[in-house]
Length: 307
Image (tube, rainbow, N blue to C red; front, side):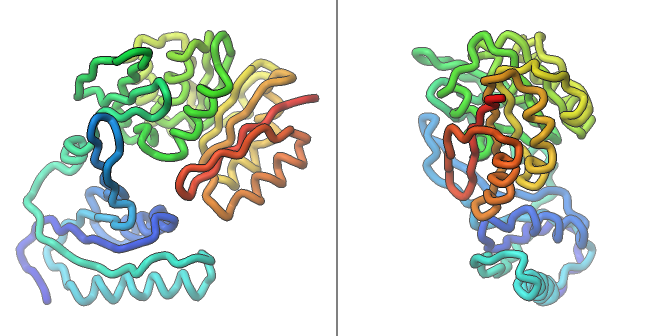
């Protein structure tokens, strides 16, 4: 079955969310793709009422799209992952459905689905194009992620925010390693941190983070396009690193180096099953485990520097 009218196609793939990143890479490497939705969330009164994490939607533009060929392609890609034992769990059916879409600007369309959401006891993330009036002791953080990771809805971000809200960042000097949209540094400042340094290797993310900090009138945050090795020794009371598990393990000596004695680190971005890599790095660097936190298939560790 072929379609000869150039237009957008919504290709829906049924997956286990654990493999979403790999499926995104497959789509972007093999098709002209102008947007991918890994999850659609609906909120009512700031509470998440539904999510579609098990369906990835890719928006593809093509002169000719062969439905059967697309289905066969994803079936073979799934089998290749199984043969290589990339995952040890069920990665979903990878069944495919395809729907014709009107021509729209997908870079703007997604904003219709992102509404204010409460991600911790006090923090409410509000998109810059929405309005929200704080209740009780709520703190509003306005975010436009641009092309950077960090809308606040992802479990890894929420684990970080809940950790430093629980353990307290008031009057702390903090570092945000892999800052993305700047959301964690901004939240920490809103909760009373006195100074924040934030680094990311993505220059676009850093520029986005600067804009978000300015929108939130949090100007005492230094954003730098760099890795953690540029940060000074023994300076920080609290560090958060929301990065992939293998990167966390690699930079663990730097994370320890930049901490004050007695300081805490939140290590997030760890997928269930990958925690042994991070746990080994924690042990090898003589860091003390304070707490393991879990949300869905994601894990965060709170650790402390004692020496």
